Length: 116
Image (cartoon, rainbow, N blue to C red):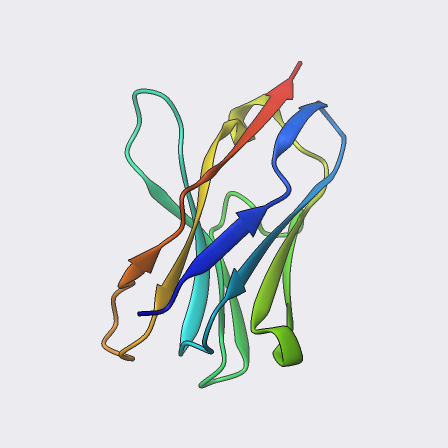
């Protein structure tokens, strides 16, 4: 079973930056980031696909967030710039380990809080 270890959350002010990391114990087909704010549904943020070597972003974060990876470490990073209060959420890393179109393994989540 693939295991995911997330890190990098915290409390910042609007306009600041944070970098999240997600390390997988084995390389999956995709590693993605999702977030869930209080009272809201979980939403997709960004993903990297080792199968396509492509980066994918939600419209709400395009131009502000950058996803990158370290192949040797099976790790993806989410560089979050120009943070807004509406980015406040628990951020979850997830892995697609079967290339079946869904994310099968989830991390424990890391809190990101952006104050105005």
